[in-house]
Image (spheres, helix red, strand yellow):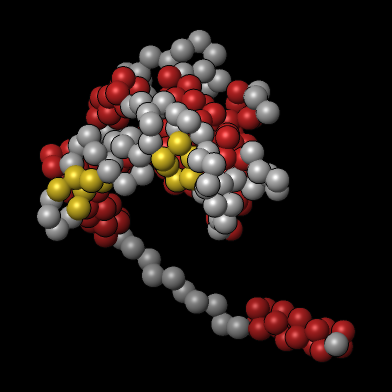
Length: 213
């Protein structure tokens, strides 16, 4: 078996070393600008339609143009869009949307939420927006940034609401938690690999920046 593995590794390395390289397509500046503008147009088509037809609900149903709450009634698409707005260079809309989220999103609602989705989309979205907000000239930063700020505090509050889901024999979280009352007594312990393994990014970032373990 060892000899077979060695031969396989040798063939694999030789293939990497001597296989003809693939020349990637090169884009002209005009071509890159075309695709850049196309991406921005697609984003704003989705974002503006959400604001027009679905806000303050979580998502827009694209065929019926109706809004729906899917993951907890957090105006989720607005949170999801914060970092993209800054990457697109739209600082004024970022500031407006961030202030709306800070003022209106409820952390203690009596609602059952997916631990996984709330972590990656709400906690993760707020953390990304918090860190990117440091480059926004028109947004006043608190003393001590990046270790303080309203978006960071909101992310931390959501993460704290998810913590009861980790009170299991294994430490692997339940799939669902109620933001006000915690885990239902009959909640199933069955979860998925992503629901267990991807929490470290957001929770690790929060621990690092807040000092809370």
